[in-house]
Image (cartoon, rainbow, N blue to C red; front, top):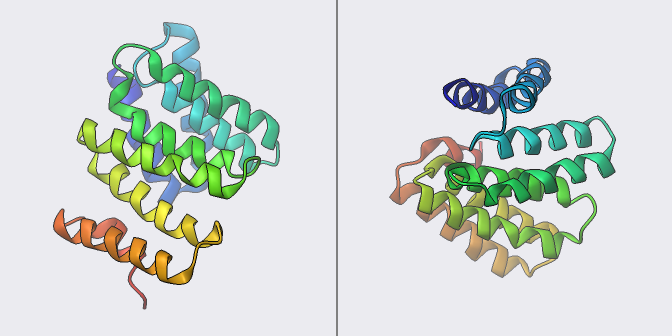
Length: 169
């Protein structure tokens, strides 16, 4: 489990700073899950694999693995990664589902992350939900309110990482 947790944090970092190495970490997580059995972190591995497939152009298979990741959340101990899994799976599902429907899952991701104490993914889900509201065609005044609420939440929790993504240059 510790190795999977290490790879999961490495995966998150690589998404931002070393994207070309991310597939290596993803595949290592899948290999560990298959070779050693499913762990509470395995849903994250399958969701990241789905995201990787979608990024490479195989949307159908990417969605399939994202769904598998979400289904694995029913296993004991998986609630710790539920927010991240739901959020990442939702980003893949936006390719095949109407954005208006898929975007609502970011609220589920936010709630799951908050209940697990995963502030980073809770803040990310809040931000992505707010921005997704724009793409879902909501009125700009509503989008502005959602973004302001998201920013306020990030300021309240002193979460500068995601807050900096919403700050104009």
